[in-house]
Length: 158
Image (tube, rainbow, N blue to C red; front, side):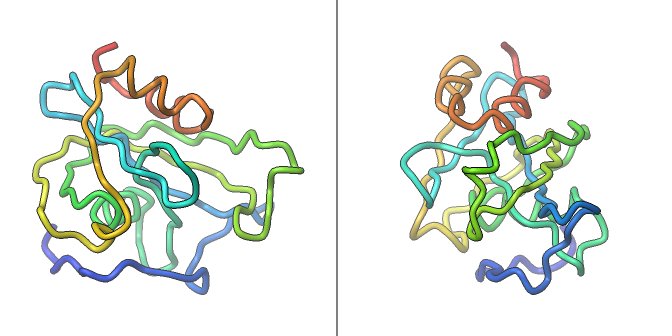
């Protein structure tokens, strides 16, 4: 990552990319240890539980993978190397679960190897991060089908 890492998380949706059906384009990473035995999860800020680093792909970002790496930095304090495109995962929530704060989304996940964990990062004050083996991570992501699918598609040792 050649450019300087910002210690400020991006907020707001002014710069947000949307798909052809008005869905929010979200990019994320499945951050793996170098030996692929563990995955790094972060605490959700919206409800109790653990999630994968992800967030909106913004207009000034050339690629979804660049957005995914920025989100990994802001939310988890990690520098990562994208290894593989895990493809698109649809938002399977029923329409009744879609709200103004959580609009319909299209998820694009990437498998990434964590190359560095920093001690200070933009969202350190509101999130913790924790390494998990596949079985435990899968259990923790169970209530989020799109995150579980991304984990399943990755080459983490199952």
